[in-house]
Image 1 (cartoon, rainbow, N blue to C red):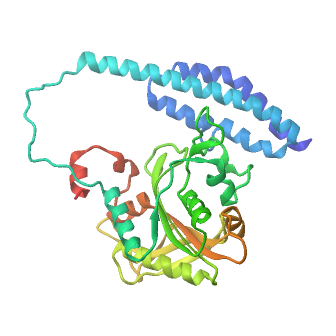
Image 2 (cartoon, rainbow, N blue to C red):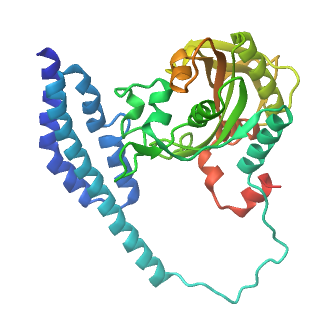
Image 3 (cartoon, rainbow, N blue to C red):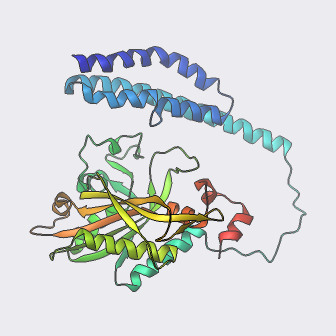
Length: 353
């Protein structure tokens, strides 16, 4: 009963506050106001999101009832925000059409040519590096199923990552979503080819994050999987990470460390750090660096992942996942991830090929 009380009180407050929130949404005069309201209500630490997290404290029957009520409230808030944002965008468009003119007589620069974006450059560089070493280099579908994105990676139905505030689900398509990581390709490949296998999967991934200086709802990942019937140890994992970090940052000598961490698809799981120093605003990876920076997650493949991939009998493997956008930012001294999606021609020329 104590757990139920903790969940009921905020629900009552949420139902009482709904009318006030709707008025605030419909009276918003800028997209930033709507963003702030969205974060405060259904963001990762929002009022409604927090109430969802408290459902785990109640019984299964109460959870269903309260969950349905919270979903209705959340849907009303999302629809109201989307409707008001559409109205504001229409007003802005009409205002621009009335006040802005375009001089089509201005000459264009005929000597300006396009080039590869810095992210595209990095992806090509990583692909070529692993192809030259005999790895399979793959990319699977960006629209995935619950099985390949969660179940096969040892994430049960109650895992927080499966909630809509973390994941983009496709409306009208049951158990279908935009993949949250490139690990799905590893499961598909093991089911098709079995083991031994050495591969990377590289491409776009999606999370329900608010766009700011360090987060984006779309980003790029590279994940590496090495699996075999012969024993593979965490020492092999560390050696492969050394090779990749050394190659990407263009240094021969690096120092890395592992910190214990939990990821459902590996056991044991670790966070990977490396030593670095700063020079002229840029991060310099070096064995003699005076600071440590976190680079990503890694670990030894969990037995359940092999089972879901159709691998029977004794199997060993390691895997790691790294954010390409983050690596590019660290290497080039870029402090705002939004710059990677900008259309400023000066910026693009500076980092382009």
